[in-house]
Length: 143
Image (cartoon, rainbow, N blue to C red; front, side, top):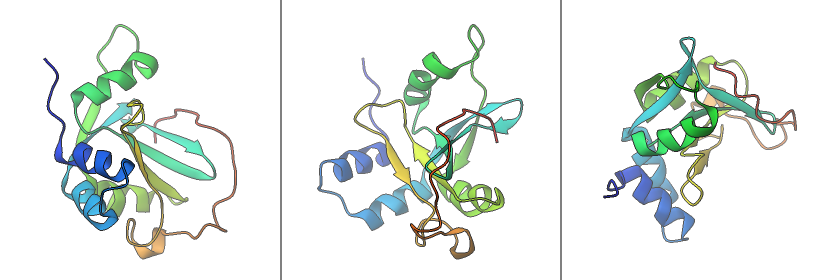
């Protein structure tokens, strides 16, 4: 039996179908508890397009899909359960580089990226499109 989707996963599905309200999506992300994998006590992130993306998942099923390809093999993947608002307001801001939130990246039709722009991250952490250069692809390092 398949696990019911979280409210955030539902909002993401609506947005991907062209039916959602972007403000409601951001609000739901901020209210949601997300599972962020960790490596050696550091949160999992990847660098792509000049942005450091903190990777988070809406539930354990979505995290398990990711762990199949990026997990530590025969051991369970460690993770932190964090409020979306804390991720974008504190963690992303504290990275000291353009950073955003990537949700459910291992879910083919259910991923969503929250870029480092005003309205998603704090103003001082926001960048405009010109600021974000094109750097290396995902390196999967914990941050």
